[in-house]
Image (cartoon, rainbow, N blue to C red; front, side, top):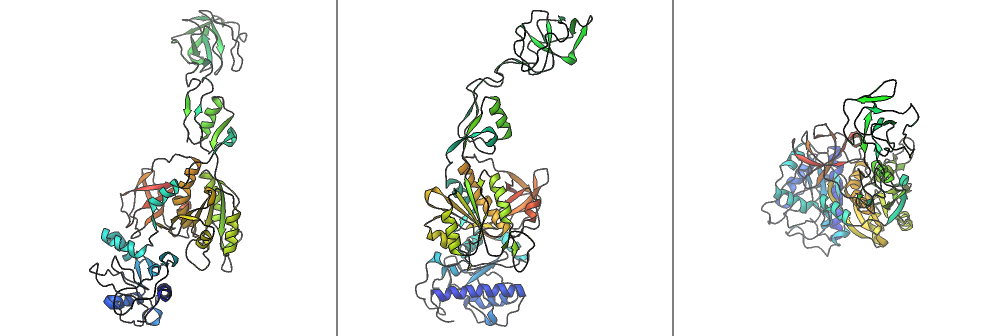
Length: 548
């Protein structure tokens, strides 16, 4: 094995991982391999058979093995001790092949002399290549011990990768509620109260009839006036006072005449003696009268700050005397859909694909309380992305694609050029781990979603939802928990978000079509189950994220 510097180590690792990916897809057989110290050649042989078996180096602090390219372009992969990050190595586990090129450092051992100073850790790309799982990898992921997982985490994650729950907490803490604004009742739906809703009047504001029937005074029987001469109707105040032993026809919602002691329902009374007398078996004092202030008194708090304005709340506010409400302003959101390969209409052709995110994100963001603009389509040019970000005045910019380290993934360098502060840069979740959250000047934020549709939804639920909840002043609801109806395999060290459907009795069933680029499972589902690293068995309780 040759001496290598930091840059060539990075190149070697990239080539190795890409070669493994190509041969995995072709099911190629290795044609041999350089002998690698401490078991590396054995790993190369396994990689050449069409899949690379993970191998744990023991003891933990022993000299690490070194992986390198085998003959025929085949990549060699091996596991390394927890405290060592090799040059040009990688791992395969749980159906994933992960290059360790982010840490192009010198490794101990006679075959690789100490290289020149390597590039800074965070300046190196992170290689993450899909390899089809074969079932054994999934079982191995479920059977991983905690120590195994800690080894895998070190080998697999860059230092800035954020645990899923932590990423959500960071996003929620990234901003406070936006300023208040007054909105007419018809325009406030879905926003959050910025001030308490206080009753401006008593409800009801006068004693009213709860039923159609007769307003009566005293015990019966009661004498009636001539038909139609003194009927008490809703919206017509000024009914004559009732003397004891008298009754009058009354409609629901009409004001109770002075002196009335009860309302006798139409079906409970009987008119006798040529329509002049009303008899009843029994009527209690105050029956079917809604007393003034029975629901609230003027000055009572009806709803606290932070309450979501629902149709029912709008009705209550109107009844309590409001024409407008003080609500937290909706965050304005710009959506930038990145990629030269996207079609906005028609059938996919010529290597182009239909954009699924542009039509989906606007309504989804609106359901989260935002005010999204029309999606803006930006090509794979760093200058175009920088111009679009710099021109936006929205509170939040949501981008799709370009968050990884590919040749046209410009989100990271563009944010650096704009002086953005990265709050979350990669999350330990599948799909969607390259997602990010950044803060620009003047309190503006950027949520970078992966380009694959289901991965983008994972980013939306992980980062955009808690950020928008904070900006809109919404109070987080209680976590929804459900029991798994089936086993769900997991990633060795990352959480998984899996589309599920409810069975109506507190259980959820995982759905098919849950690949990063698939939306079919999500469209048929009721939520996304949060599956912990290593997976979860039938009967396990999991958190379920709701869908709009």
